Image: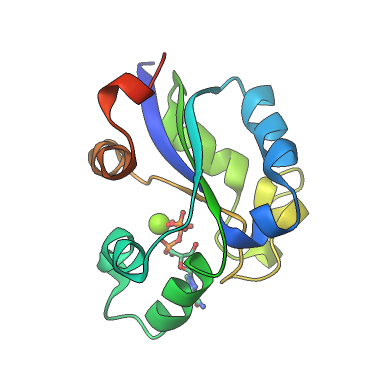
Amino acid sequence: MAIERTFSILKPDATRRNLTGAVNALIEAAGLRIVAQKRVLLSRAQAETFYAVHKARPFFGELVESMIAGPIVVQVLEGEDAIKKYREVLGATDPSKAAEGTVRKQFALSVGENSAHGSDSPENAAIEIAQFFSGNEIVG
Ligand code: RTP
Ligand code: MG
């Protein structure tokens, strides 16, 4: 199993409810290390670029609005099989389908306000990390 890095966002619904520490506790309990972290406010353009893959979907407008509704915390997580492992920590996109103990089961408000994002492939993890962090901001 390879040591990987994945990109994480604690979404506005999570920062609004002061859940950064609670989500970080689940991340660390899963054996993932937070090797970079900062709190930022996305511009509309940044949110549209980040979720460009969903541009044609009916929920795109709502998704962009929800991502710019307040501050987010962007993170780089490192560990064995980090990409798949973090998506397991997050649980299903729809919180009503998420397993017990997952971030989305515990904290998500809805499919749209589902508290956190995790990269879905090594290629996307590299692209997403580069959108928010320079190399010297990541300390493994
Ligand atoms: P994410 O990219 O945020 O980690 O979520 P994901 O891979 O589990 O799900 P994805 O299919 O990539 O969808 C991206 C985000 O769009 C919102 N969404 N809303 N209203 C809807 O039907 C709907 N479907 C997706 C969610 O916030 C999802 O996380
Ligand atoms: Mg996704």
